[in-house]
Structure formats: structure tokens, C-alpha cells
Length: 506
Ligand code: GLU
Image (cartoon, rainbow, N blue to C red; front, side, top):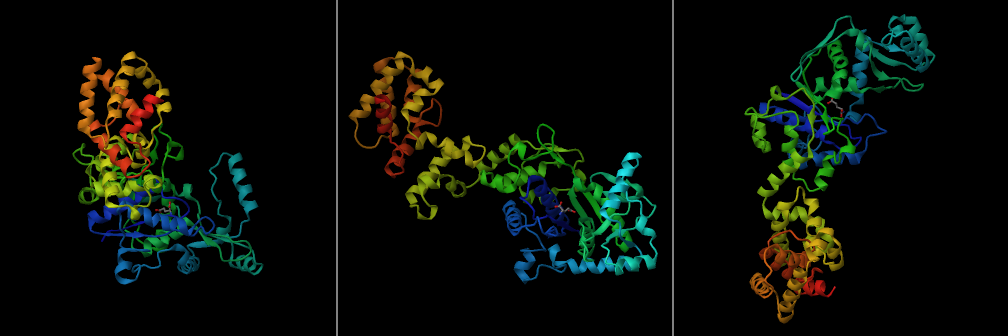
């Protein structure tokens, strides 16, 4: 049975690269009817933080990915046990690694290396000078038993190294095909780093990841290609233990549009920041799936996770780098926003307006309904929900002076007809009492047209600027009731009367 894992280190926020790795693992497991495990790689105690672990679990859940084994897995929810390979946190598996190190030492597959950092540095420097590859020469490989015992008795710190044989290290990569590394390029890798003075050293990533993958029965290792050069070392470790080498799939790097490795410089990269910006999880998940994979028909681009889980194959994952396009993500987000239930969009958007609307829990039905209608008007104009407050500025702000100062408005207002139109319009507003309806508005516009002889955009732009501060925007039919009701709801929103009279008087 297929068993795959996502093995993040809780040393920072989950970014798009990691999330895509998690997604591809999840999709592959679901497609193959296998298991998806979550393993927390927290051996770097200095950099690992509980809050990052909490966040990464949240991120996965938010994206819609569930995991069968590991902390907070579906299995744990059902049975209380994280799974048959527990524990799934590397910091809780140190004894397992130590036992395996002892086994390798005993079997002569690994050896203690007493070389000091200074000696290793000197060796490296010499290699550089002589233009040789900077690999460990293997001095401690040849230490005799008595020498080793003497060093141990003297309390000399040591690292544990794996002895690499002469054969090339080969593995199968489902994205890249067969891969081979010459043994010399690997040299004898350190498995356990020496600790200062004491013998209990720290097992390194390549070692613990291999022990865990083997003991957890991982059949396919799907991860970023930044790990490609680690893989031959891991293959050598599998071989030393006599374990079956899994199949690998190294996913290409994600680049920014400038073809540089995607980084914060390009904008948001952490999953949490996309959530904060008001991207829908289904849009981001869909987009991540397309970063290196494409449907067989070569054109369909919108997929739910359920659909993807039926058609995803590693064979269709490309080895060439994927370019992250915010435009494409925005396009998908708009697609999913259009499909999302208005209640859900309102829930997700409320936070951006909390200062103006108060707490969601305290809001009355009328306010909620009003907000939902506002969103129906504004959401089609945004890429992601955090852009809403700016778009809603046309309702929440009423600043005649600022509106008059906008260069495009200056032009539209500068003509004599604009003054006339606004004057006539204001007269009608003044003479009216009670809320303004779209019918009132339409009637007045007709009257103003007749009275001034002005029509088209010369007629509409000045009125729109007076009402909203801009000369384009949503239909008046929808806008006017929102303004009037918003004003009545006591949200600090100006009504039509206040806006027009304020503008003309200003
Ligand atoms: N903890 C490693 C990382 O986050 C896992 C790499 C792997 O999947 O082997 O990069």
C-alpha cells in the first residue's frame, strides 16, 4: 500500500513550496488509496517552535488536507492513537535513532570520527588549494580498535559517519527518471554530529529522515528538489541497514515571475498570509496543484480537491521549474469567490470591517443582510477579500474636498455643465424628505437632464463623483439603497442627501 508523508520542520511559516509538497503527497495518497502521514521534524531544538507547529496544522486543515497518521490525525481523532508508527515527532524518537546508530557501529557500517573541526577545516582548505572536491578523506575509517578505545577513554568528542562503498548511488525518481550519483561525490556523510565533550551527539537530518521513512513504511518520498543532493546519502543509509529504497519524486523549485527563486521579495509566500489576504482555500489549493502539474487535456485549470484526487498522477508532474503567477491565482480566486455562498463570503469578509460594523456575533439580522448585499456589489471587483475595505471606501468615506482634488475628477467637474447639473440635482434633494429611493434618483436625473440639456457622462459623472468620490463604480440602483440603509443603520455612513448637499456646499 502506498504510504507517503509530509515532514515539515516547525521552524517558520509554511510557504507555498512546502504547501505544494503537502498537497502533492495528499493527492497521491488519495488517488492511490494509500495513507498520508504527517511527521514533525523538530530535531533542531533551537529553531523549532510550538507556535509554528500549531500554525502548520492549521494551514493544512485550512487548505482542506487531512492526514491519516500523525499529530491531530484522523486516526487520532477516532482512536486516540496518532498511529502505528508513533511517535511522529522526531524530538520524541531520539532513542530510536540512538539504537540504530549503535547497530550501524556494531555492524561496521558506520564509524566514529574523532577529527576536530580544525583538522576538517585544514583538509577542506587543502582540497580547495589543490582544486580537489571538498570531501572527507576518511582518516578515521582506518582507526584501529585500541586507538578508538583510547580516544573514547580520553573523552574525545566524535561524530558518527557512514562508510560509503565504491558503487554509484542510484534511485528512481518519478519526476526525473533514474538518478545516479557517483560515490565520491557523497564521501562518508555524518549521521550523528559530535556534541562538545559528551558522546550523545545530535543525529542529522539525512539520517533521521531515512530511519523514520523506513520505519514508517514510506513507499514514495515526494518533496522539494532542494533535497535532491541529500537523496544519495539517504539511499546509502537505506542500503547500510538493508532496507528497501523507496521511490522518490523531487518537485521542481517554484520561481517568481522574474525567474528568481520565489521569496518574500515577490510578495506573500506563507499560507497564513494568503489566508489573511482573503484568498479562498480552494483557490489556493487549486493553484498550488497547477504549480508543476497539469491535467491530461492540457487545458482544464479549475479543479476541486475531490476532482484532483481522482486524476492526479506523479507522471504528469513536470521537472521544469514552476513560475508563481499572482495573476493566475487571482483569476482562480475570483472564480471561486463567484461560486461561494454569499453567507460564507460575508463571514470571511466581516473581519476586514470589524472596526466599522462591530463584532460579528453582536450584529443584528438587518446589518448582516445589508453587509451581504454590499458584498454582492463589491466582491466581483476584487481579487481577494482584503481589497474590500478600499472598494467600500465609496460608502464608508464621504470627503468632498478629497473627491474634488482627484485629477480625473477635477477634469469632470471643471466644466460649466457639471456645476449646473449638481446645482439642479441639489435643489431636488433639498426639496425631498425621507429616504431617497432609486426611483427618486432616476426621476431627478431625468428632470436635471431636461432642465440643463446635459446628458450622458457629462450628466452622470458629476453626480457620481458627488455621491461616491469617483466617476465609475457600481450601478446607482444598487448603490442608493445601500447608502440610505447604511446611513439608517448608524454605521457612520452618509446618506444621499448628506453627500450631495455636502459636496455642493463644499
Ligand atoms: N524537514 C524537511 C524539510 O522541511 C523534510 C524534507 C523531506 O521531506 O525529506 O525540508
